[in-house]
Image 1 (tube, helix red, strand yellow):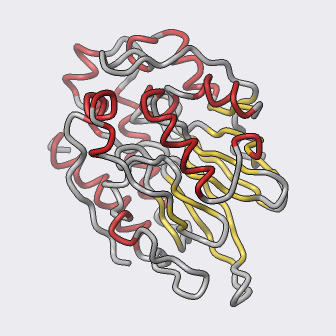
Image 2 (cartoon, rainbow, N blue to C red; image 1 turned 90 degrees about the horizontal axis):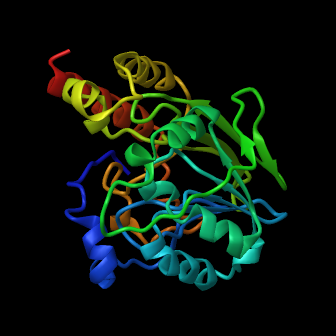
Image 3 (cartoon, one colour; image 1 turned 180 degrees about the vertical axis):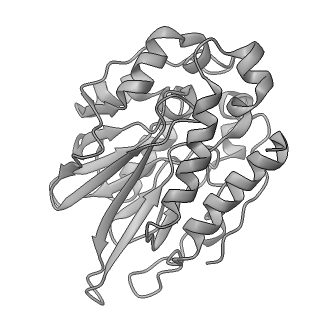
Length: 280
């Protein structure tokens, strides 16, 4: 699975609000314990079976929540199996359905303290960004600590703060053992790489919270994180690392998403794209 980036989804909120079938996709497995469950091809939501309940990464928007819930049922789980919801960052497309999913599942919600503060200070820059989506205010039960993983069952999700796209973008790393070959594989998802919030125009005219030093930190983190060995790199938006072209092909014998070159290539591509657009 060589790294490939595809064009972003045009008009995603309008489509999900009025023509959701155009973005619908069946859930699919990507590793021994992880499934793509968002039900649509705009924002990635990931379900991890820990052996003692499930962890859900991101919730997408309320308008696609029924697609998320339907996907969870389709792969044999129930909403009540979800014990922890990990939010990658404070933009509505990743946390818009957080409150509804918390109510439905009874799960604890996690987010970085940095993005919780950003969300509280600037809802207009985080939760209220599109007329076609109607996210709800949510509450957070726990803040991440990079030196303390989020553990459930036999899965421990390590977090890394990566400011840039927002003040408190969080990336996730976890290990899974394949029951067929007994090998351990490392999975990772960068919490947010969109560069539109890291342009000088955005800093000067469109935000009262984000600062240029966050862009510098984003680029530094991209270089540093390339040294982390990752076997299966997952995207927060599936166009950023093309995965839907292999939907339904994974088995524990045919690990079609296993390629330890993708993570570094992805980070290079995002950093270089930002530098080129900003002439850095």
